[in-house]
Image 1 (cartoon, rainbow, N blue to C red):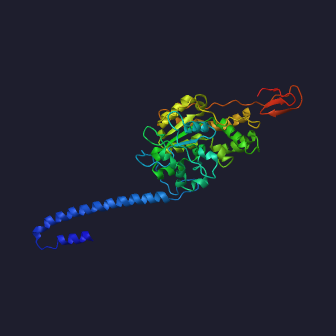
Image 2 (tube, one colour):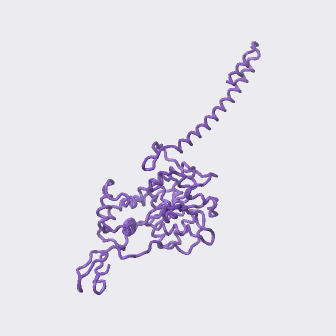
Image 3 (cartoon, helix red, strand yellow):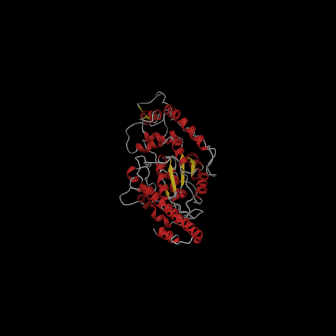
Length: 391
């Protein structure tokens, strides 16, 4: 209205000789007003988009209810406040992640280690390593603030990379299955550029056997052969069958394709479990170069080394062969994926192909002695305890 009144005053005169300069003044005035309107519309658009990002609903699988087909790439985080962990040790389960996490969390001669999450009252102790936010529905639904609170103290950490970014870590290996949830959370927080992601990959049959042994400590209800034939093989043949969690944890390429599509490839370091286990100095050097900081240690301390009477050290050879036959195409897909460009310079290339571990052939007939029991494919005399057939 103010603009209209001012424009009216410019033309209330009767003298035509003054119209031209008045028109010039009106033109300048109009341009200035349009500039202000344009600025206001931009500010309003930013505010609206921010509000929509915070309140857009999520579906059960963690994706937004309405997503754009365009894949967003993270940009540099600039001076944004870091409230989320800057490192995710996101998989794979039973592939050396505990040893890597303990090394990075541990104080050393140069620093206090990367900052880890706080465990709140009533939560299990293992949350100090792995928050299990993205993979547990009830925790994820509590929102980003619930996750951020576990890392609030890390703002005061002195362990920072070469660019001054705080190094804080969530080492939940089950995150490998939830790249979209990770992306959505970091994008809404404006912290995509500060995130580094690490994976350690193990030969999938050996990884599955290790997971079976871990679960068997809680519920010894079936043999490993039963696990493979009833849960793994059906699930590899039909996506609607079998134990989806156990099967999916072995399909590395399926998950990494999604991670590579959502994040810049240089943000993701893929390690070989064999190198982590047998040449930890080399593996640690890769991680240090990737994170931009040193974490002195003589070696990685292998975790989960407990042996027990119920622990199966080797699978039956025929079971191993059957499982490997169905997993091999997925492994080849992984090698091709990792051979593509864009990887961080310190990543092992070419990525070493998986080698099957030792297995147990069916026991030979009992040669002598009294009654015998079968332990993991080796026949042992229950009277003398001597192994009659080598495992």
